[in-house]
Image (cartoon, rainbow, N blue to C red; front, side):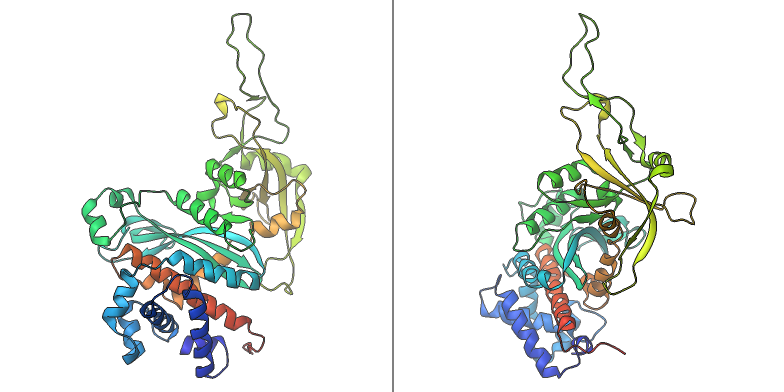
Length: 413
């Protein structure tokens, strides 16, 4: 069991026993049949065995006579166990152990050959950096000083899939599944995890999510904090903007109760450049996975702004304040990154800077989930199978994290 042995210097028998015990605890939340539990434990072991491919056929081959291919295939593609309950069980056990500081909302591509895997089509993938034949999975991860924990997975189904009865039938897509955008899928994952027995943390995300003012408003209404990247061309209202009801234009003029701003919205880049002379400051913060590491410093501009998607029509109530954050490295002629956040006005600037710079840790998560555990190796054509595979990969990932956190773990020299 090479991956496990690397995780902790211990006997293979002891590691196997810990894996079986952890698997039983987690899988029992969703599985109540002996065959399901047996196949689930075997699948976890197969994911952690050394081997380049973690798809079903090579995985079963590595398990030798312990696994039956037909039984494992039925367990993965058709067996009616709830993958979300497995992810929930993992999160509630592991999140308290990794000192969670933020949740990261993201999506990732799963390159595919052919057209039969559910959700596959030629579409843009940030993973590929271009348009390619792939599936897209939306995910939320808890990120902490001592590790990361996936909190949920959702397979994005393009409209052409949702509207094709034959493709839906072949991929066994349940009839209740309708088209949802990546934004909608991500919001559902966040809200679902928010109801679990884990502490909430600020949600981080890239510009694709940050530009959606409705998502930001919905998260704020649901009691979630966020720090999202935004584009430099996005428009916001400066701190000094006043919203008020305009006076009626004469006796016959049309009255209105909608608030209107006393100035136009500005692109965030221009606003930051205008504010920089008085508000540019150096902030020192920690941005590593090791709190004992050396602190980092960079220059930032922080401003309290207001955003309104359709501001020319006015607003029924005054838009809420948000933080506009811009990093402006000393050696650069213009800011390098921009974020918008709904943390309280009194939030320490060091915390804002740290959260803004923390989203990169998700790449470490994807690297292990894909590189070591085969997150993107599922080759089945079952919609349910995709969710089962991602839940079991999440469980294997959690086990490796626990092994690394074990007090007797021997760090590499």
